[in-house]
Length: 340
Image 1 (tube, helix red, strand yellow):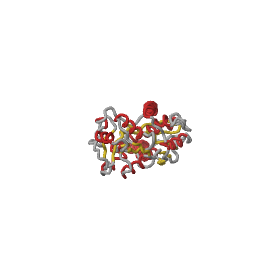
Image 2: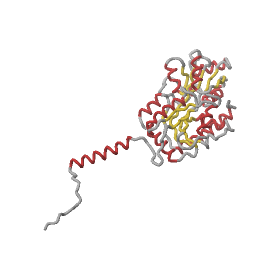
Image 3: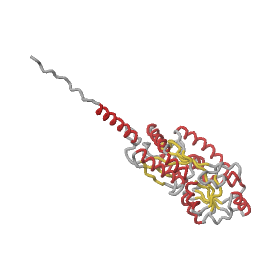
């Protein structure tokens, strides 16, 4: 008698089935590659992240910060909220971040003014700008531009120096605050050119630019990005850039060094977190920065603003900060610059 035989059914894997399986695998890989950068244990970010910006809206740090916030939102799959906290030359914002929970949900868009100059200007802060903040990565650097109100008769750096020497104290220069990069750029210019511009500090580059356009002050050293619309509209005239060479975004504007040899000032922008933020989160954010700055549209947007997009490791960024702290300490001591 024949006995029934039972066996496991074999799947019918023909050419069409194999093709479908391969297509499914490729689709899964493609979908995974398109997903935002996230951690797995625990998931980060699982809620919106606050990006504290240490100056008022409209200035260079604000412009850079908002671009980074927008791009990071896409890269991380979570909203990055820009939060302007102006005052005390950026120290209010730095203290907020330095004393926040080190969980990656409060970040800082810093600059050399706030993170490399302030340590020498404010030796008695209730926090340490270097030790209490963890560098994540630099995002851009750019020179300053010396701009003047159209009513200023000087049409070049050389003519401005001649006018300032003929009429001491007649030229006032605005800055984003006492001890800021903009302020020290002016003091360095005073020293090297043998003139005396009168310093007028503001709480941020935005308000300073507003008064410059309105004619309340005569000149200003500030970031190219914030001034381009005013320069192109004829509301301000650019006399020189603080880099060693001319900048492609405004090629007709000479370097200040062409009239004042040796003058050079650049500023950088970078992302920070509170100290003791887990290395996994620092690393994830650094990779996210690398991802967004590898995109041509992001790089082109920064270049159009007169800034050079830069990506660094946290360790490279930390080394830059240490070097700049030492550099600006000497400038501050030599100029006698003081904080508000």
